[in-house]
Length: 627
Image 1 (cartoon, rainbow, N blue to C red):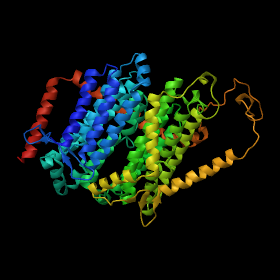
Image 2: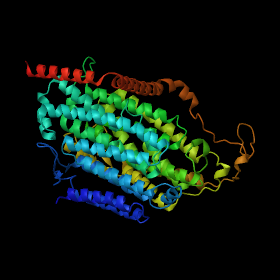
Image 3: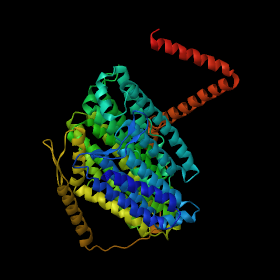
Image 4: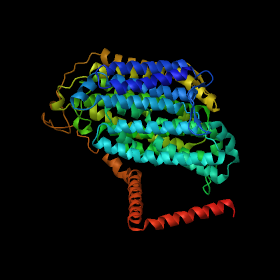
């Protein structure tokens, strides 16, 4: 029995425990311990610094096809994120949140089962050693994610069905690519497919690229297949939103790495020109990533719900990961991979904080909050740190990953893509400022005077994840060590890192010095503010001078509807409306085709269909046989 077998067994035992005992209150601490056991089993595989660990689980499906699992550095990295997110979500759900959730008449059993199924399916997917196992893992991940989205019912169920439509389309595209591979190679094993790729014709190669690429793009939420993500994540119960928002779409990014980067390589993508365009596949993917950064980010500015604002920002952050990978040098690929990690912990921290505020106030409407910084100071600190990381500001983990991407874009001669990524960062800063101002700054609403800090069971995982953000920002070398192992595994240039950052002839990055200077500056500022004695008088909010008037206690100052109205008027029509129109057109087209087929099926004699099908089959057989 290999260490990978132990990981699978512990993960399967977690799912079985959730199925059998998920209704009991004892399930909450038990599930937390089981996710911790999965993390321990993953660390025992020790694949990051050694040869891939193969599982003894090999299942024969057809006469000449079997499924097998193997973990390497890439699998280990993404599995660490998936199991870690499962552990954090289980911790967040254990305690006060679950008590209130059960009091509302909801099922805790469904939450435990969906989370365990999601983690188990991701563990299987990340070990896929052939296309058949990869497809099985993708489908299990998709259906477990659907369960998580649908358990709340109502709007969440509608969002889950929308996701299912996208997921089914992506799965069919990947299945079509697998059929093309089997027809030309006779096998679905990675090794044999890699050997057969050079012998494929140009048409077959492009068909394979488009089918597999579009399927993975749906799973990644890449433009223009991004419209399912925000609502599906936002309407899921809090632990599900935290888990899915942090790692769900990253499974599609893993598939992209496992297939295109491992088998084809970035250099080959750069040489593969899109017909009649003059641009390479690598450039096409880089620009898709750039537009994925910009458009969802500025869509976030229009959101009135804190959950939707964060989930739309999360869609855009996936573009940075792909863009960094497409740069192709050591810094760019390191930045893209590091951003997978930094975004996962950042989004988890932000969503936990938003749901904590929602737990105390009963709303996530940005127009119904304000001034909560004094009532929920620790939640405010978590959101502030998460915002700094999401926007790529020091001293957080997101600064390191985005700085690597920016620097590589500049040094590799990609100024337009650099401008696009900076535009996306500006949008992230604007959206993050709106979130912070609307929830925590301004004037406290009268009905929220009694609001208290989040319960310890919810606060503990929030602060722990925020602490990881700070630690990685100050000392990124442990994560860069993981990233370097992945780069070596994929045959990419390896980043030259050291404890405080990384070294490069075009410019080093030392986060220890940067953080030290920032802390020194903050210390001097605090000394200047608190060390100088100045006579001051506290003024109550109703007595504040605002616009030349002294408002009374009933006057509202925190109304933030249309927070960026002027900006939206300028950019709204061209960045959001076309995609909504495209989705409506696609839905209308599918309805027209389905209704036409329905009429034919109902009103035309079935014998006509049988005759036409028989003629088509005979004609194909004659043509294929060369008669």
